[in-house]
Length: 391
Length: 224
Image (cartoon, rainbow over all chains, first blue to last red; front, side):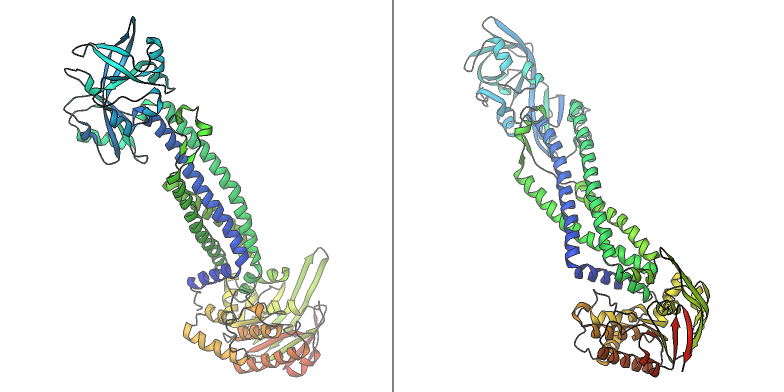
C-alpha cells in the first residue's frame, strides 16, 4: 500500500513555486492587490455617498427619528440610548406672525438654540443676521416669509396663537434659506423658553450614529416607554431618499459587478498563464508518479495561496485608504452644491461594511479558483509524456 | 522481470500516420542492464515510455515485475510509477523550484519516507554523486553534468525496481557523459535495480547485459 503524500508537502511545494516564480507571482499578486483594494475602497465609497445623503437630509433639521405628541413627563434624556447622538426637544405651535399690516400663518418651532447648533446644520443656512440665542426673544425667519412680511434683521414681529397665554414680540435675529420647500415656506424658529405656554406636547428629533439602524432604536423606545408614542424614521418620512439610496446601491452594485467582471477576467487570464508557466513541472511530477488528483490539488493550492496573500495585502491597502479618507473626507461639493441631498455638505466619508471588506477578496478567490479549474483539469487529464513532449 | 510482448504504437498527426513501434518484444531479468540503441526517430523513447507506463501501447502487453502496467488505471499507474520506477530524461528535467535536496527527496516523500531517514538518504546520495554541499542550490545554478547527476540520484533515491534512462548523456559532452554512465551503472548495481536505457552511443553495448538495435519502430537484432 502506497501512502498518500501529505497535504502539507503540496502546500509547501505550492509556496516554493510561488516564491521562486518571484516576478510572475509579484505581477499576478499586484493585479489582485490593486483589484481588491480598489474594490474595497469603491464599495466603501458607495456606502459613504449614501451615508452623506442620509446625513445631509436628516442632519439639517429632522433627525433620523422624529416623534410627535410627547408629553412633558417624557424628557429628551429618556430617549437617549446606545447609538443615539442627540435628542432635540422642539415645541411646535401653529399661529400667526404679523409685522405692520402684514400677517402670515406659521408653524412656530420653539427650540433650544445651543443644542440645535450642536446637532443640526441648520445654522449654516442663515443667510443674513445670526442664529437665535438661548433666553432671548428672537425669531429666525425664512427669506420667503421675511419678504412676505417685509421685515429685515433687527425688525420686530408679533406672534399670536391659541395655545399661548399672550401675544409675544420677537426680534428678527436672522434669515435663513435651505432650498427645501417645506422648511422655507411654513416654519419660523424661536427659543422654546420665549413661548409662554400653559401646557404643551413636544416633538423629538433623534440623531443617530451612521451605522445605527433607526428601526432598532424605535423598537427599543417602544420597549422602554410605557405608552405607544408615534415614532417616524427618516425612511418613512423621506421615501424619495430611500428610493434614491436603493437606486444608488443598485447602480453601484452594477458598477462593482462590472468592475469585478473585467478585473476578474484579467486575473483569470493571468492565473491561466501563471499555471501554464509551471506546465513542465507538473509533467515531470506526473512522470514521477504524482497522481492527477495531487497535481490538481497543487494547482488549486497555488491559486489559493497567492489569492490569500494578495487579498490580505489588498485588504490592508484598501482598509488603510478607507480609514484615511474616513478621517479626512473627500470633498465633492463642486459636484453636489445644488443637490438637495447634499444640502449641508458635499463631503463623503467612506465607510467600511462587512460586504465591502469581504466581498472583493471573496470574489477574487472565487474567480481565481474558477480560473484554476480549466488548467487544473487539463493538466490532470494530460499524460506526462504529452506535457513533456510539448515543452 | 520486465516483459514486453508484441507491442505496437502508432501516432497520428498532421504529417500522417507514424508507426513508432511495430510488434516489439523483449524481456529483461531483474537487476540487469539493457541498452536500446538507435537513431533519432527509431522509436527508442516511445519504447521506454511504454515500459514506464507513460504511454499505453496500441497492442501487446508490458509486464513489469508481475504487474501488467498497460492495463492499469491512471491512478494505479501513478502509484506503480512512484514506487517501482525511476526516470532520467534527456535534459535533467529537475523541478526548477525545488533545491537539489528537495529534488532528490521528492520520490522519498511520495513514498512516505520519514523526514529523518529522508535527510540521511539524500545526504548519502549527494555524497555518492559528488555534490555534497550543493543541497541548497537550485537547478539553474548547476551545470548540465551536475543536473544529470542529480536527476540520476533522484531517479534511484527510492530504490525502484526499474530505472529508465532516455538518452541521459545526450545533452552532455562525451567525458561528462561517460562519468554519468559509470555512475548510473554503479548505482543501479548497488540497488539491484533493472536499468533500461536508450542511447545513440554504440560503446554502451559492451557495458550492458543486453542490448537491442531499433530502426523504424522494430527491434532489429539482439546483442549480448
